Picture 1: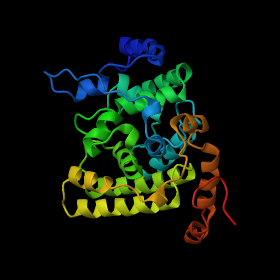
Picture 2 (picture 1 turned 135 degrees about the vertical axis):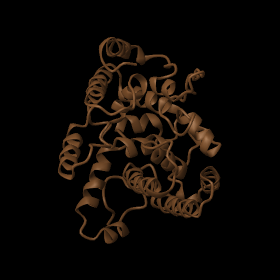
Picture 3 (picture 1 turned 30 degrees about the vertical axis):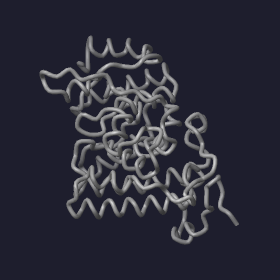
Picture 4 (picture 1 turned 180 degrees about the vertical axis):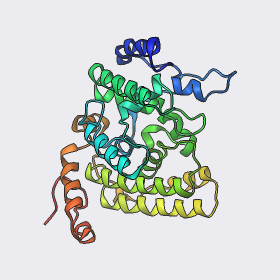
Length: 303
């Protein structure tokens, strides 16, 4: 779709219709398809059928402030812009989930000021017309997770042979880390980027009370094992399925896990996450602080 003129006007008018129903093939899907191919509609997963690990992992990886902004994270955008200008490089990594959704549905991947302006305008329009749950539901169903893999349902099946509601912590964290570069080989610099993202997401999930320390440690062990196997040259799909498949130990269970409705209402425990993030940021000795963390974070240190 064109970024300006009639194309943008059509997108603007289309946004309220996103409250209901399921969008057909998006602008990105049509762009990625071969000239003689008509991409099928994305396989749909209702937000309530998404694993709690996946729901919060995607937010943590792509847009930690998702539940706080109105489409554009202006503070993050300003900080990244200043940093990029000082370093003499392009601004990157500042598009919110809502902006990415606007781009996926209506725009194109080519970077330009015109496209970014249209993306921001459409994101604001979406935030006024749709609630956060609907925006996130649309996003996870049209996002790309590999060549020809569109939507969380297809991604869970393609990478792990699982349903979206069954994704465990390892699987959820890995899928979330693939989103910035879904077609890039999971090797070299892209593997290092994914590992850094995975570490951040584990902090996010613990701070949100979605996983306990046992699950965190077990997931970290699996991620390190997978990275080692990938660096040794083993096939990505084989490594991820093998490392993600075994059941977690009983100690990793947290009892009554929060469901999608609870996590959406709390913004993935936004208040508790803020306290945890502040503690981690201010800690002079992070290792000592980590040793004092409770089995499951509920907004305060134990003892």
